Image (cartoon, rainbow, N blue to C red; front, side):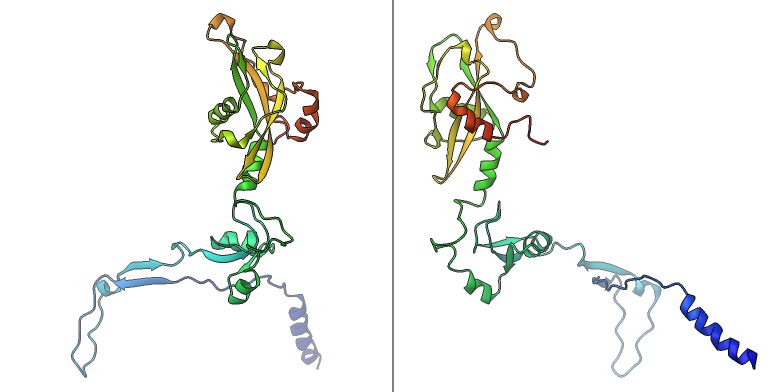
Length: 264
């Protein structure tokens, strides 16, 4: 009698005390397309197939879908995205970037007929609640220019007056192609050579696509063709905070991120 009672209790005890396995079974989508290196021999009609030999089980890989480059996904932006475009624009991006950085945060939707109809008017609607930018990379350009310190090198021996073409050349030395008509100079004229202006700051305004504007921090440096008259080079001078040439430029210069404050 006792054995008949204890046996079911042991079964229940093992069922409750057995450790549970936290295993997630997930299906893997792996497709390989193969072909036989040695095709099997043909057999006559209504006769048994000829037996396969070892050489018939040697295969060659034709296609592996895991290694193939996945096609881009077309999405419609629901807001402005730097480097891509404005609200309502159709863009083609890589699947991983589309899922993680656009669709999941709600910055874009799939290019379905319903969404195409919903967002078709945003490109031409002037009353849009989101400000449209001149190009997908406009704000990237603004952020890049606002983070540089433009070194304007002027002659120490010849009289000069700072013009837009001087700033254009300085930008070109830094790798930026900026036309003269896009450079807005300070209202006050800067003349030299004047050692009181050495290593002091001012700012110029750059207009991007006749729409966005960005102030750019500039610093005057004098240079001479005579080696003995040259000013000693200061290492990492861009990390030093100096006084502006004009006091009224202080508020704008303070609003521009300083080179020493930017993260590497």
